Length: 299
Image (cartoon, rainbow, N blue to C red; front, side, top):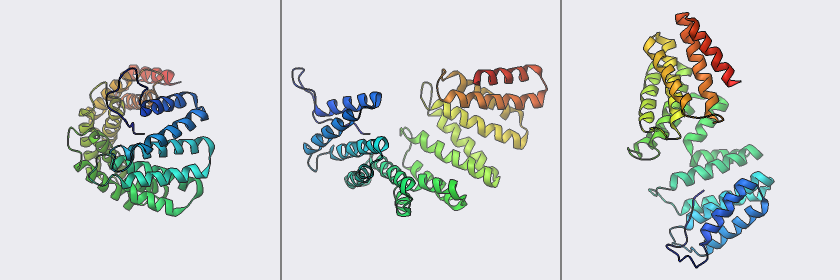
């Protein structure tokens, strides 16, 4: 959801800007789930929109805010008209963001995600087709998972590569695109055993990790991703340095999130599996003892 500001500096004696009020209501709704807060937030978003006639630079953000609120209301109530109106508003917001507007990719993702929601609800294939046209890579991956069609995975990788070219360092989304390509390459390696896919996945995950120094919230996932790649290569080639590095990365990932961080379970599973592999190689009792301790920590 985009935060939109209606005014610049305002005096302390004046009422707070409408955007601050409706963002506070949205925050309160997220904490309480109260329908009246969401209703009031939608009303204030609409009031903000009335103060932003075209070509106001924040008009698309306000339209997007209303659409997001309606989409959330649909999740709460299941009312079809809220979902339909959200999609209509997302379309309107997108029309106000022609390329190369920096927010266009977010708007494309919003409308694609909402169309996929409607497809899952009602099974209308035209919604799935339109979602593909808006956010092709994500929806191609969805179709690949459903059908296993390799051409969908290949095209998704190609599109993620195009996105990466538009995100040179220090673009804030570069690490995300690197991880997207690398994860899809690893998936293709699992399907086809093409060694070059695994090697490139390792290289891209290394680059993504370098762009996410601690305390970046995405570092734990990047550590886990690279560790899985290296563990996979160890199973292919038997290179001990790959297994050693995978275990080292898993240890670092485990140290980053404190329980009950949702990534901790993944880190515990990964390091337990890697150290179990180390035990299979070394036969050292301390490795097996450590595996047991990780399983106890996970339970």
